[in-house]
Length: 281
Length: 145
Image 1 (cartoon, each protein chain N blue to C red):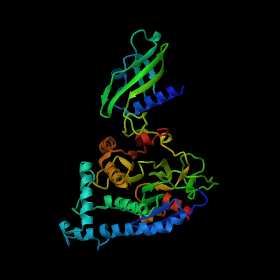
Image 2: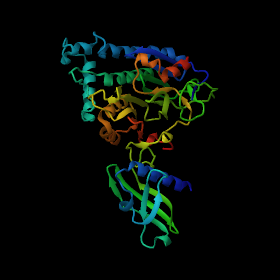
Image 3: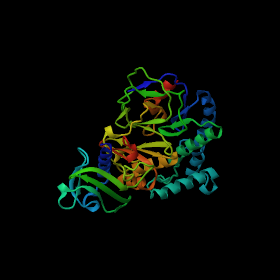
Image 4: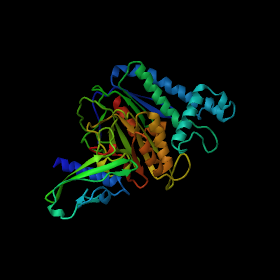
C-alpha cells in the first residue's frame, strides 16, 4: 500500500497541454525557482503546437492559412524530427493524421519535457523530476528532503487508500511506479530510473466497447498499455506510441534496435517485459 | 550452490526468452535432463555416451542467433550437472544473465520492484487534466503538499 511519507513539501503541479505537470526538486528551496523555469517552456510549446488552440501556428497550418514552408523554424524542425521517427519506426509512428492534418503532439510534449529539464540544469538545478501526464524525466536524485510516498510493506502495492506510518530515510534514486491499466489505483512495477535510462513514457489504447483501438490506425492493438524506459524522453514517448500502434512486430523490432526497457500489458492482462525489468535482473 | 542457482536462473531466462530457439542439441552434445524452472520449460542437455560416469566440463558449440553468438559450458561431476556457464551471451550493461533484450512473458511476481520503497512518480497512459484528479499521481502530489 502507498502511504504518505513525512516532510514532503517539494512537489508542485500546474496545468498545461491538456494535462497536469508535476515538478519535483531535490531541494525544496528550489521549487519556486524551478517552476519559474519550467512552466514557461510548456506554455511556449503549447501555444505553438496545440491543435486545440485556434491561434496556434500548427492550427493555422492545418487550416491552410500559412504553408508549412512558411512556418517558423521551430515548427519545421519539429516536423522534421517527427519524420525522422517515422522512418526509424518504419512508418508506425507518424505525424500525419488520417485526415491529412499534421499533428505533432506525439513529440511535442516530450520535447517540452526535455527542454524544461535543460532549463533546470542550465541554472544549476541538478536534482529534479518532471512528470507530464505520465511521461517522466529525472535528473540526479530525490535527496533526503523529499520523502515521497512509500509502499508500507515494501511489496508491490494493491492500492493507496490505506495510510500507515512511514519510515523516513535518505532517497538516492528516483522511482517510478507503472500503473495497472485494469486498476488505476494499482501498481504493476516500481522501477528506479537509473543512468542511462532516465526517462519513461507510457501509452495506452483507448477502450471503445469491448474493443481496444490504436490511436494511429484505428485497428485493434494487442496491447492495453506499453511503458518504455529510455535515455531520453522523446525516444521513450515515440516508441511507446509505436509499440501500441505496431503490436508485437514493432515491440520485437524496437527492443532489438534501441537501448530501451519495455513493459507491456496485453489485452488479456498478461505482461511482457524486457530482461532489465525483471526482479534480480 | 549460488553458482548453480544463477545458472538455473540463466537457463530459465534462456527458456523464456528463447521461444523458438532450442538450447539443446545445437549447443551441447550430452545426455542430461536439466529442469530450467518449475513451470516454464525444460532444457535438455545431452552428454556423450556413458553419461552416468561422466565428469568434467563440456563446452558447447557457438550458436548464432539474431541477438548475437551464444555458447554455454556445462560442468558434470559423477553424472550430475553442477554448473552451467554462459560463455557468450549478449551482454547489456554487465548484466550477462539475459541473452537478449527481447520482451518475454513475465509474471506479476517477477516484475522489478525497487529496493527502496519510495515512489515519487507514476507513469500510466496519459491522463487529461480531469483524469489527473483520479490518478495515483494526484495522490502523490497531494501528499507532497
